[in-house]
Length: 83
Length: 83
Image 1 (tube, rainbow over the protein chains, first blue to last red):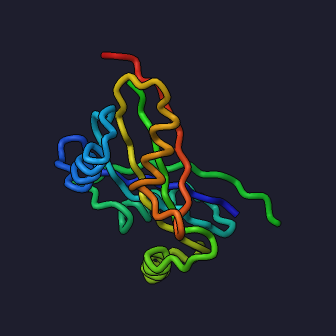
Image 2 (cartoon, rainbow over the protein chains, first blue to last red):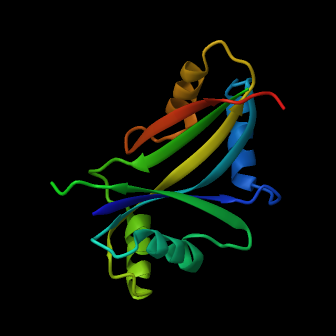
Image 3 (cartoon, helix red, strand yellow):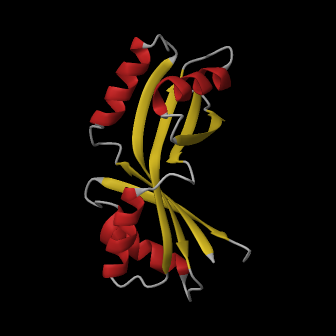
């Protein structure tokens, strides 16, 4: 089995309203040291034995997990020892 | 400056409806190798110089970023060289 850890975030140039909202909330909670907050989506995807897990995950990101016009994605593949 | 990378996810025992929805969508897109999908939130938080950034981030998670009854969180702190 392979575990894919995928992070999807808005591209730098795109306004991140959720990140702004969290930043303002943290400042209101007196976390004065907060300079910037960006928020994204995180996926953990378990894959059965696959010929090319990286190609599979790349395809999933392109097709579903990320809106590639506004979002960028990165992922890490971890081999899981069968329990 | 310190960059905190925070991941917040539902606890294992809690049903993850978003993860289920993504899994079913991936299966419909013919990604037969997908066994399980869990979805969470990802934050990148930039902190100005702080006496104890880890304590600050821990407090932020407890106060705002995670609903600690249903969610678990983990984070990584990265020192950023001033540009």
